[in-house]
Length: 251
Picture 1 (tube, rainbow, N blue to C red):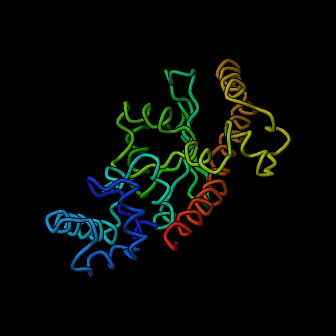
Picture 2: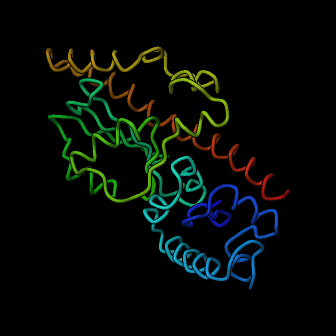
């Protein structure tokens, strides 16, 4: 969907983007190949041409950070189609709602889950290096919680991020992650089914107090579910949003 997008251009909002589609300007190439665009001055056309050429360069050099800065926050989902093979699904556990102390960072690349655990292998420089391998960070409520916390710790490189919570709302999936999972028919393993953030904190406290690895393993299983379930949700949500946008383009 990125190649059909124009809202990343300064001064081009949703109405102007829809107007372009309506006039048969459906993608970047058709825009660049059109000598004139209805209701667009020659100066603005030249400016937009330069922005689109920069976007093409960024896209084919796999620079997601360019679009992260340019796309409106509600349109970050458009990154998914192009960058999904280089995406990582992230979720953190902390000692409180303010994120005073990060206890677990979970990463899922679509095939494998990795965990970084306080006091064992959690190193924020290493986390930064690990995240540099990817082009898109996908979270649920991460724009408000996970990523601001990790950025304060200098653990997040300049790559794009996509918060599923806002995209879910756009297709009628409301509530928290667990509620959305139930709506979509996902079933977590019974041992962690029904657990929430407060339970995760309790498991961490028990593990720290007793040293019993059972409680840590249970916490990691809970975190893994939080990470891994983001992938099918992202695929479903982005597919729905893409179909809706394609209908607008085809009109």
